[in-house]
Amino acid sequence: MYLNNLFVFGTLLPGLENHKKFIEKYKPAVYTARARGVMYYLPSDDYPVVLEGDGEIKGIMFDTPEMSVILPEIDEIEKFTGVESQSHLIREIKEVELLESGKKVKAHMYLWPPSKADWLKKNGVLIPDGDWARFLRENGKL
Image (cartoon, rainbow, N blue to C red; front, side, top):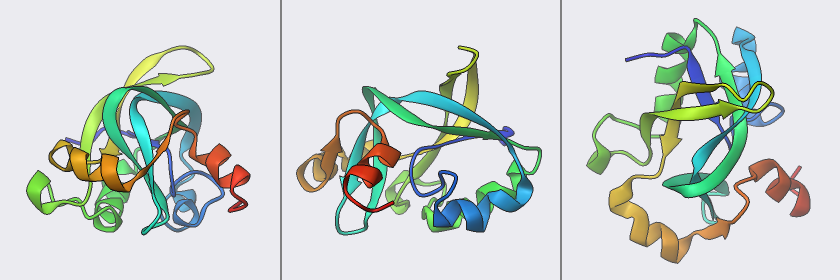
């Protein structure tokens, strides 16, 4: 099922390389948003992932009728196959809150598979506030 909405929190954020490569050309509507989850940084891969949880993830929601074209390309870079045990990340439809209006909508979101949660907690670095852009700024990566 394809929705026109995609919530992003990491390398697909505006201004970053994957946004320029996969999203920018479609000129989606852009909304500052948040979702539920717990963010971890993977030092060996140099990007964040989100595990389901009760924390807050800060990000952006894109809305475009081109989402059915965009998602298969992103599925490839996120190594999402549709089968959890064979995927690096999984894609699920989650509730997202648009910060400007407070409206809650459904959006695609890439998550770390629950079956690999123990590994992530041992090997990832917790980003308690769920803000990848802030993490990049504070660590001199932006």
